[in-house]
Length: 456
Image (tube, rainbow, N blue to C red; front, side, top):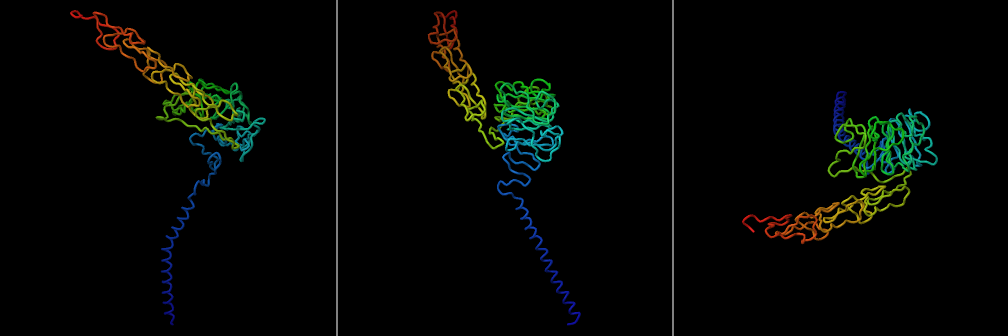
């Protein structure tokens, strides 16, 4: 074969190879794309309940890789012994209750907020100094630069910045180790706590609220703007109202035992929810949460060790700690919500004959209940009646009428030809016949009419 023929054959073979390569290129790239796309999609799917890679699952709920907890589930209350409350973050630092009920903190420590006796920044969890002899933590909350914990005996220990008395120990001295607050009140203990920027509030075991620290905007709720260095009771939460959950920043809000919300303090942006921008120095009800809507709060306790207690059911309560059961609401009383420490007396116009109830019964028509905490309703006496339910008294029979039996829901009109000038009459004989020369032309009359001239 000549050189020219060999050259032409190599060109032909090259063209054939090039054609094969182009076919493979144009077909192979899309197929490869589909394969890699499916691979990527399957790698992004998380089977079942698997957590994303930047989170981990704990008995506190999901926690992201920055240490922020996802406890913003309805009913979860930071700093409450009745809910998850084992970790809390302040400004550039974090504190957690450990499984032995001690406390470890880490991060910024310029004000002693890590509680280890120093002001040295810690890049790893570091145990606080002692919480007190044989004392352990059951709930924790962090402000900007101070921390407070409820201890296992119901007392409160705080540490860190104390410029405005936010540690509640009667001073404005910074504390680098856990320090007991002053008294919460005679025989009072804390059941929930929340720290704001520079103040702290706690719900006490009787459902009242005590606050301490900075009060420039009335955030302590005691009717003043005076800073308090020791726990100070707020003004009334409302008639017969108690607090079941609390949250604090530069203002304070509490869920009450009837599931309404009261707030107080700074209100420049409407944060008190009362329809105004007016600062409130005492607890003030928010506007409506919505038709038939109420605020919720968890009522299950989870201790740091995993030991749990069960909330008393509606209709029951327990005023004491360390108990193995709950008390039924007494007859004449009720307990509307779970996890309550007191029972509530039935109001006038209502009663409750049974124990362990979550509501009271309205007095029936024809009956009344004239005082609180009653176990029975009373029938209206003769001469009186009651057409409505839920009443605290009965109505006297009107003039021109009578009521001749008990528990009546109506009065009976005197017949035509008779009249009755008196109220509260008990018999038809109280209706008098019209005198001679007089008449009564219709029923239910209180007087007779003289016959006109020309008639008799």
